[in-house]
Length: 398
Image (cartoon, rainbow, N blue to C red):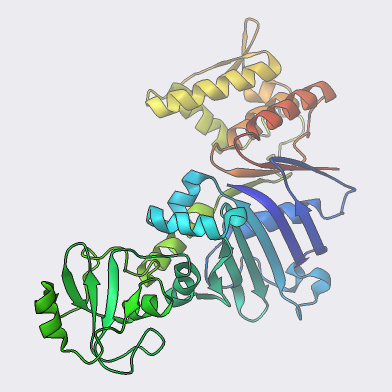
């Protein structure tokens, strides 16, 4: 998942900011120009995402609004790009339904468009969520299955079925009276249903009035059709069941929440802990150092893989070796084994930022060049370019 476009309105010091984002974006501006507010907006959207509603946002007061003017809502408009795998995860639909949607909305098939607002009175609300030109959520409500099915079934042509009208005066333009759905291949006759009537009205299922005035039971017996005096069950006529049901829409909203919420991580500029002047301590959060120590000595295979990748990348930055130790992570400088507190600030910054970068999260990093010498900053920038091929990274610099 990647952010293609984003528009933030009335948030903090941002009156209206609209950007097209690639895999890697470096946001440069003067101090106080709103760079951090932009990253915080991304963090708030993903961190508090819900397809419908969402309650009162964290830290909600009038200072959250541009110019403290709460008459207009804060608005976040995102266009997210999805992969084929993410499409399958978020939209658990039969393949023939996916093919129809892709055919009708090919240019937007991989795009999920979301508009969410924060109102001072009601909190979070979803104005719309669209996928492939289809509205899924509108005015903070899940769209009805009928609305989506009408959109889709214009493309559906159902073969091997035909509906026969037996009562005079009825046809596909005026559906009613006795009527039978015929499964031509299996030679079975069924009663109709609202779904079948809809498909007949839209000409997805052909119909005939040649049996008008006849008795449907006698006609079915004469033609050799086995009569079931009920509509077909889904397993008997899978082509005829609704393409989208209420259960499917509920599954989509649940999958969407799981895929989007918490997908963005903000690494703020205030990530370093305070230290006492004259006492050499690491500015890295102790929980990070403890996590690194734990992973480095773990024999769990997933931890071994994670540690090996981390170690190779970090050692490539500052040409020193990382040495696991049961008490604390040590860094080898020739024949010295030093704790993190006794290496340079730039090297500590690399340990900290690299550990916070997660494989499956989009990242927003404030001032990643803190403590970096220009040469180290250039090396780290190359690293960002490399990992951005797999996931999006957005950095802000003064």
